[in-house]
Image (tube, rainbow, N blue to C red):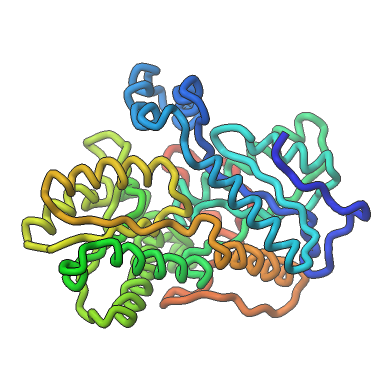
Length: 385
């Protein structure tokens, strides 16, 4: 059973959130004990034929932390924060939680929601950007879960994934404050010359090039939204930091981490550790690492940045600091509430103001069929046309 708040006795969705009668927090999931590490990685890599011995090697990151990923506990914190925010703003909308790769599993969460009488569900995926792994794969998982429930003879559910929130003020503004706080952690003498490394998950170059909605409907050809969206957020944060610190020409760069693919396949670069070495060689006095690609401080932040990158910086003698992720920041939970209300109003046919910062504007609600294609083979996905 997922940790869910039951609906009000009336069972009716509040007017402001209608047609939705529940919200699903959909995340990646992670192990919470050593014995769960390899089974979790088997879930993540299912269908790729990776030997168990290789998974044990990959799992060493988790074993360094007792076999426990921080992500589930952080999702519990976000779940509680969302319920609190909704209640404080008079939204009697129950919030459930399900994961792609570990308990509580997505299909179990949807099964519970159906049993509780919910039929029209808004979905917040804890991934802010366009891309196969960050968007379409979640939509494929939702389609798989709905198909499994249909095979069981369950009621028909409609699920709508909320739009990408990478440029929503409730995501960007906490990252600005976190970057400033990280700068303050550095020795005062190096702060003015400190550089900023905005980090996100590396993905294959071909996947990055295919990410996003078609940039030309006549061709149906997708364009590199993954990198473009990250760059837009990075520019927003860098500009705000420059204004608040009075350092107008502070260099910054978008860099990558957590590569996991075969060596012969080109992935997005530079890697954060290579970047630190290059900046040190150029004489940079310090670097602030800002993980704009991640919603919470899960394993790929705790290991790849706080452990591996920090160790590399220590080896170089380069001062570094790492900015916090948004987590359950009240501005982010407020943003989720706004996204639910925005989408609900849109579904009711009302005109709405869609909050977005930067040059790219608010993302679409419904993905194009050609959006962020599956790199292996086409598969059914919800919320596309």
